[in-house]
Image 1 (cartoon, rainbow, N blue to C red):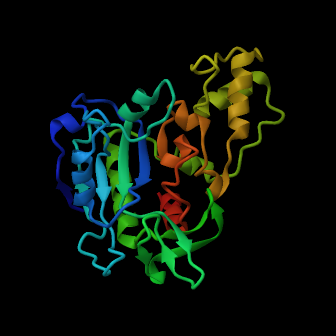
Image 2 (cartoon, one colour; image 1 turned 120 degrees about the vertical axis):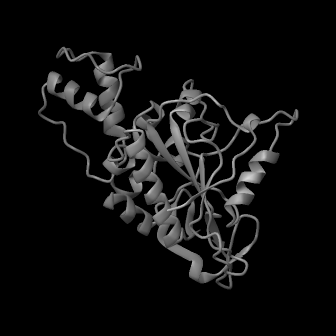
Length: 280
């Protein structure tokens, strides 16, 4: 599968090469052309006119909601060299910079949540009409919305290609992160403290000190903190898209922007996307 390079100017990202531990999925909340997304990052500035250095390594084009054009559908654009980095998470965590450094970001061109009008039409947040064939009804609300623009089959294929390619190149365990959360929660009842510490360390849960647990059999504050975070994690197909402490602690694997921030909707639990991720 081809990757089209349309790199931003070097002052729009950080040219430091960094190790990668995560692949993070987003959608753009915008139109179908990946090149336009990249050019918008070149134009964005702070209120003081400062370059923001906000971008992801990859953008995947989609289908036009205006005229159905598919010229960009599934097209992968590289906006900056994979080994370098830019801001795209925007957490308020003290480790926000590190989270961005260690991530390979993938943006899917998609408007996201839609509003259904009284006469049964669907509109984006900028009041653009979306054809019904491009709308998915999730059956219940996800973060306040029931209707979303579909991710296309070609977009999902491109996401799979990027995950498989770069998880191999950077030795990222793609079975961790969201994919591990698709499974039902493993029971910890009946484990000794030492067994529990080993189990939590194997899953990547840290103590309150931000470090792996000392496997000493002592039920201290670090073990209690890690167990609470593990127990509070929502699992299953939809729960795996919710805010996650392991993601915010720097946990390895594939994650959604929604795992890092409670105020985001990218990406949403679209069934064909979930099935692709489960097939990895």
